[in-house]
Length: 342
Image (cartoon, rainbow, N blue to C red; front, side):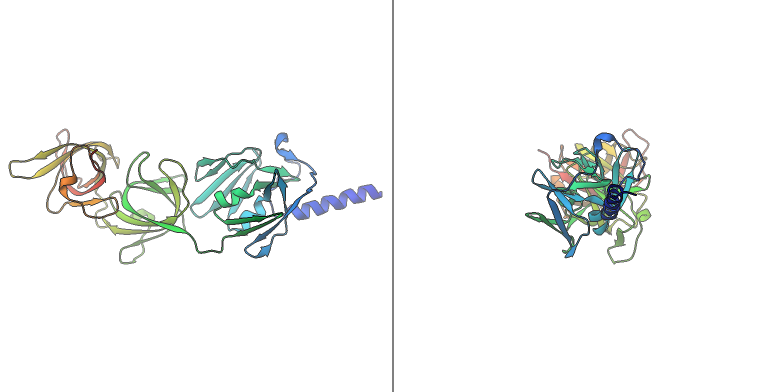
């Protein structure tokens, strides 16, 4: 082997060593040609420190923005990375949080909501690099840039938010589980849950995802970060059932009060039109109020019956025992005021 060939072999071995911790395409596999930059010299290397430890793989500057090795950074932050050879894309998962990106495209999905960051992922010598903003915007870590040095940390106390509300939808599709609170369609918030999510009742006893039901009043501890979609979605760490665990057979309807009716005996009933929250819940129903009917807002605070007027948006929870009339008539267990009439 002549000197030139030996040098080329040594450089290749060094390149493979340096890129071993990053997202890569297997040698010989087909990768979209436009997405590949081969043997590009890193003229302005960026040194990376993650949780006070130097990262073995360097980044580089592009148009003044640091580009960082995806696999090395994401796995150090606790994400599981899967490289999809067919379309040169990557899936990232950590608990209930998930992200997707594709080489050469400035489109990053966070829990299925799309973001643009001003720079596309680049494949350089079989290592996939992403803009530093990806780490803060998508991976939710703290990033500081100073010259040609980047410092990353996720060691700070986890930033969380608390949301109270009524479960209006429970979804389990292809292993992806979520719970919607305080509305249907674009209303409310979607809580993405995972095997790491903790479920318990108000006394601290353990529950499971299967124990949840529409109409339950819950308090969720979730990430402060949420998608910009409607409704927003967020990873959820803990879900506490405040009330309703004893009545999993309840039905629900989310909609608008079309009419407030007063009976000859002074009783009040509401005609509500909207969307049923379960397969057997009607979209239109008349619900009779009683002294046992709980009236609250979406934060669980008590509201006066006088606020339940025509045009108000509500979530109604009621017994499955109803008349066979159209619309059916039932007894309200809980009326949750979403928005007062305008």
